Length: 172
Image 1: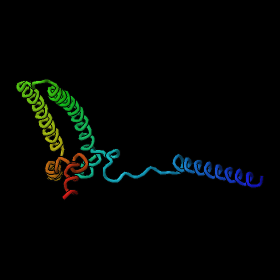
Image 2: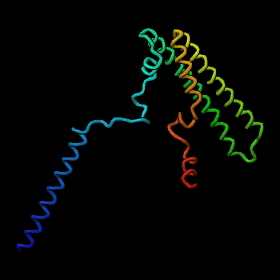
Image 3: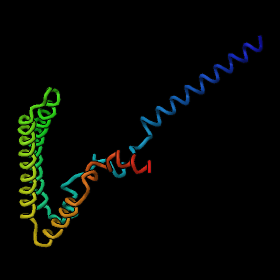
Image 4: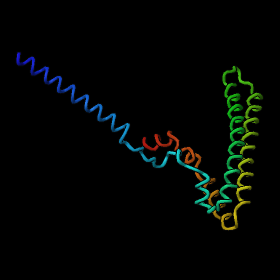
């Protein structure tokens, strides 16, 4: 009988310890845990307006002007991006056809190309307007920043090198 009481006490003790550890973990995650600081890849706290103010040295008035230009540009790019997605979906929907009509493929590619060209022109005009609100010293900084931005590898903008290039370098 004493063996049964001892195993029951052991089980009760184990349940209490597990219950207390669960409560402790809940309190840790809900009350005491501070949000982890994002290092690098996270863009949640990134503000292009604050970045430009710091990097280019915008005054408060220039910052307000840039904010307006940025919002207008973002809306324009969103509309163009939506169009590009639509036309790319149309292009790749042609893969379901047998045989694939080459003239339909060319037409779809032309539509995508026209919208990508429109996006590049929109970006160029945006930076032209941004440059116009800069003083000569700020224009030099902006030109340098744009040069660095345009000379980055395309994978850098997406957060890292393509996976297949990493995999192939490990195999060597």
